[in-house]
View 1 (cartoon, rainbow, N blue to C red):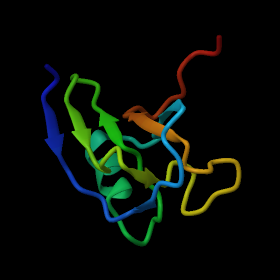
View 2 (spheres, helix red, strand yellow):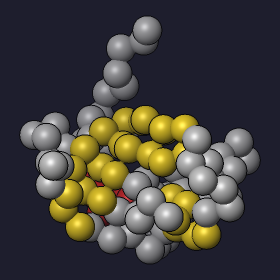
View 3 (tube, rainbow, N blue to C red):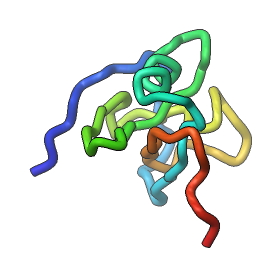
View 4 (cartoon, rainbow, N blue to C red):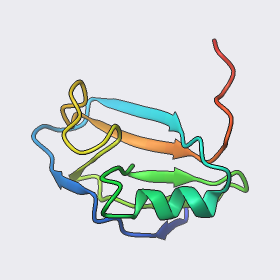
Length: 96
């Protein structure tokens, strides 16, 4: 069983359809603390369902039954069909 650390974000709304994709992205923030603060800041209007720290800790920010704002509130191309995990790192992952 995975231990999730509750860290609720106010940045979510109603999911219109069940998830059919997993959205993985990196935060681009210098620290995990900064990323967590940003994803929980109501002014930022951005979130993820989960935040994965470099030390392996996993924070749950948005319940699965809600739509997280992975690309910002109401961003085109993100119709709320995915569940997302953000990885804390200041550098992007290597290209495939």
